[in-house]
Length: 90
Image (cartoon, rainbow, N blue to C red; front, top):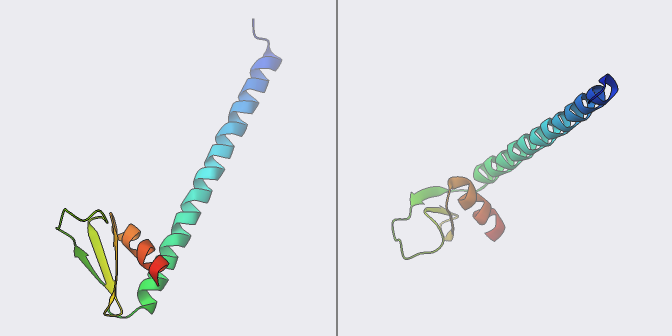
């Protein structure tokens, strides 16, 4: 049989685990917001950025093509992925 002290300890531990899970989720959200801000900064600081849906299915790069500075190109499965790939290139 579970006594009141054991029940109380279980509830305390469960609350601690839930609070820690919430903190981790909030950290992930803040990190993604920061990455989106960096992506917007990259877009703002590069001229002639354009996105195009790559319909050539033979390419393994992904579906979204991003071009900038007239000659540079990168690919990704999403716009975010394409921008991240472009940021790595230049």
